[in-house]
Length: 59
Image 1 (cartoon, one colour):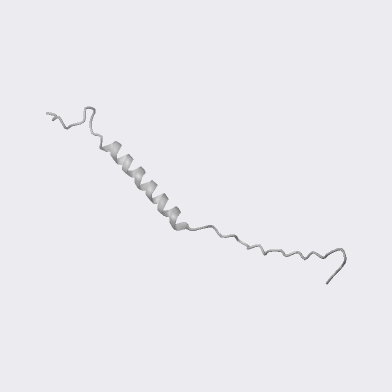
Image 2: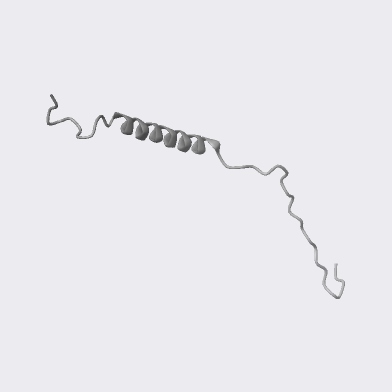
């Protein structure tokens, strides 16, 4: 005999298990992304300094 607290269409445990698994996957992805840190360039570019001279040629 079913009580008033039972679900009308069977057990909802499979639905809750899928939701729990999705939450665990999402939390794992967020933690992994937070621990990854910023990306680093493979070769740092050096700043190029250009020296401009005046038309008069002053030094």
